[in-house]
Image (tube, rainbow, N blue to C red; front, side, top):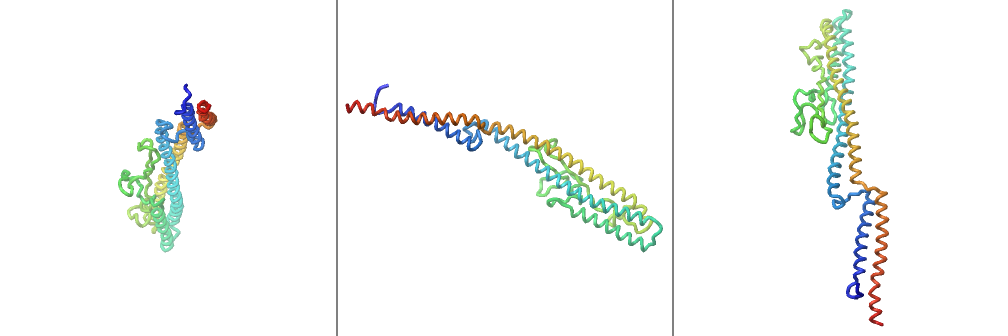
Length: 297
């Protein structure tokens, strides 16, 4: 290589190597400070695309877990109200049993009937008032008499619990139907005129009401049994979703997260190369002085 003063090729070469080493050092600093191996699309274009799809999947699964937990809370709300209704039905059975015997006169039996109707009214009030986040649970709106329809602002029919990341009925959602638990739906009280549980104002009516109350208890227990089974399914679903999210997160981490030990090795290497390139650039910048010394000499 000729000794020239118009171009300092060795300094240019050292500057180019310094720029490359400094760029690698900056990339190592960015990865170590962020904890991510892939911070821009340029780092790993295919990896970035896969990572973003995985992140969307993980976010959907985690929201599905929250949806399923909300559904469990809804079921527990309905079951709690049915537990109170159960107490009222037991009391009505007790009153009907009392009115069915012949040791009471008509005035006394009417007093028993008054409490019986009050219990029926309270059952209806509880059924109509029980709601979760504005969704009424026991008034028949979720009885499943019609198919679910979520096309409008307010869904109708069975309650759809969506927890999957897609929309496949076999994998992504359940339907919860809750029968009406009002007194009339159970065949009890003044609003059920054609049912034997209408009243206990006479001894005969009271005797007929005993079987009607038994049937009402069975109907109520069927609703509770369905809710209990659905709660168990949702709890199992939550466990499965959490496992899916955990495994997907592990896969996403392998693509996205930086291996600190490996990256620190690269950082030290790039740091040394940067320092060496800086030192050599300083030396290369002084080489034209040799040509000057010849001119001056």
